[in-house]
Image (cartoon, rainbow, N blue to C red; front, side, top):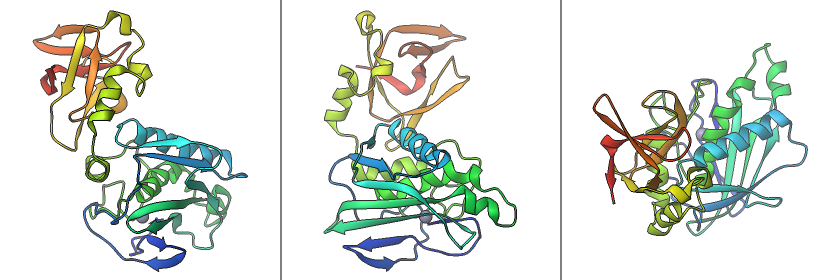
Length: 267
Ligand SMILES: [Zn+2]
């Protein structure tokens, strides 16, 4: 549950069809459950308005970019994403997950429809839909609330969110890890085709060496113009070019994708 008001409303986790509200305010804690696989299928409910459908897909893609978990869109996903009208104007989203033991079997998440948001007090909460989608998908993955007000997983919303934050990512890594298989997959290419476009001119492989649970920025040029993407500690990447600019080394992962050599080791 994400609200606009500073009131304490916990997330609702429904366990085997029995609703069980919980009140939790801690630094991105884990719900105690997770999906069996780090690949989680989702579908957008029929009739969902396009701005909300787009917010869900954009948020899923943002989370996917860190390559810890992967939301895959299908016609009948384990996770159903949609919209609902609400009489509570402070409610922006809600997530329910069903557990079998400590494994999620299915989940549902809703963003409040823009129509009902616009109708109340003339305030436009539509701009918060993407931030709310990131938040609700965090719940879907197994995250609780963050005690820090600047966090994406804080229970009250911010509209100026463009990415998930370090705490969010660290919690995902804690739950799903970064398996050797996934790392190998990246090097051999299928998981990140956009980074492997020019594999014929491969020059080597680097590994992100920063801090467990954290990622480093992938830049469009040398330290400016962030791609919006971070590559997680321990992940391995093919590089195609090495450039030194003002004493700093930059590795090119393909067209307009650069990593700071200070956080990389060659393998
Ligand atoms: Zn919440």
